[in-house]
Length: 253
Length: 246
Ligand SMILES: Nc1ncnc2c1ncn2[C@@H]1O[C@H](COP(=O)(O)OP(=O)(O)OP(=O)(O)O)[C@@H](O)[C@H]1O
Ligand SMILES: [Mg+2]
Image 1 (cartoon, rainbow over the protein chains, first blue to last red):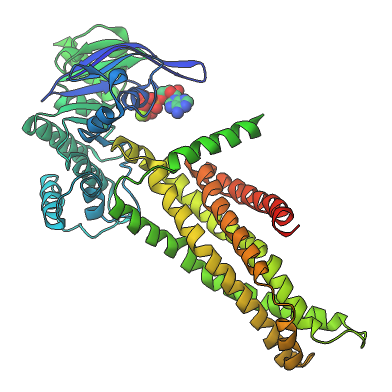
Image 2 (image 1 turned 180 degrees about the horizontal axis):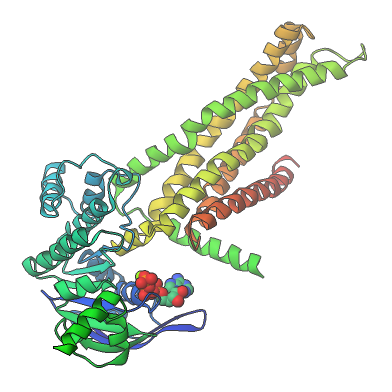
């Protein structure tokens, strides 16, 4: 479980996160939504320790990161998997080497054991026969799969995904979303996903946090979100004409 | 003010770089890969330039020696001296600063803007240590050999120039090379090359690691990195020469 209390973060005097509280629980896929520039990526990276928070508490499993020793932090990082907005695969390594990298770095497994685990996770994300390819030779959707495979190869307790389906066609996006949700459920992971994709919200929105101007504006699930009359959420959800039409039909009934 | 800040940031970077590698096996592989990328792949251009510059220095000296009172073996002597003292270390290292420096900045910068460095950090890897230390070890170990190669090929280039142009006798050239042989000068050049190798590995890494923005900024950072590496080589050359030779 991850608990966030009063999290503030700014850059060069400009506040970006202005006091956010949130709780993320195991086996649940939590979504952070909000407009571009609302601070989703900054929020995620601050939770991960890539940005130093200005104030506030971030605790993993009841222990605040501020109170952790260097060793505890290192240990925590091995329990975290992250899928970046642009996949962030290592260009100079093949698919297999990319996924094997965290194992090579942090475990004492033999080459065979590592390969077995790598093939298992690649299989799990439905990516076979691409082991020897380089990231540049893969489509965007395949790169995302490799990134997910690399993130889960060390059996993390926490999985963070920054817009895992941006730049993908709607069908592939749903496949990736469902894959993340299945993995979350199967391995009892605490998963946090950044997205601004309404399809994801409908498909996998077990818990949704809506960010606006650095505040948590709204919290709920995928059923609530279509019923709420929070103006900012309504504007966000019904920003596309398709959804506006659906809403109108719904209200006319 | 910004310069002082940058120098401070560079120094802080070095403290993260000089840590014990997290996995020795991976570190060793990385060092060999960097020796290949930063060293072996530069041998061709260094050999080519050294050979021809050696030839040109010999020809220039020969053409400027019209006074019959000046002994002909001065040609070999002058070529040897300029190759060993300045060309092989300073000049060759400036060329490597351009070639290798821009490569280092753009490869690390590309990793920064595509979040690959963040990916390393999230895994719990000290990214500076992982990316920069193998480059330092590779260049500091390997560039002295490149410098020795440049000396040898430069002097050889001068000899070949004599054979081809007929401007001077080969015996004169060879005896010129033998005059006043002083191994401490070679040592001086090698010490310089180690310092320059360190600058070539670290300054471009600094520019690449802290780049912000996209590919345009990476390009701009590469140019700045090369300029600053060359400036620092020239400045430290001045001080090293004072320290080592006077
Ligand atoms: N390293 C940084 N330094 C300074 N400002 C930053 C930095 N990272 C983000 N910001 C600023 O923080 C704000 C929020 O950015 P963020 O990337 O979190 O948005 P986002 O919600 O993830 O948007 P998107 O949906 O487009 O990815 C932006 O105004 C951005 O300019
Ligand atoms: Mg973002």
